[in-house]
Image (tube, rainbow, N blue to C red; front, side):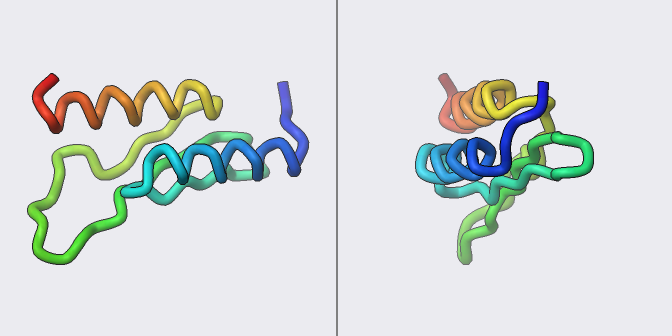
Length: 73
């Protein structure tokens, strides 16, 4: 199932709001979603720095899991 460009932009904006420490990308040729950690000065590097998924919902789930692991939940 392909998403319209406008819908993909809306989803990307929503993901960026929910996960401000990540850069969210959707490749138009494959329709895959990517999250790349935005490094912060003075913070140690996290174990998870890049995630990939087939949908925005799947990517959001992976991001929530990564956040939970990092805070020890």
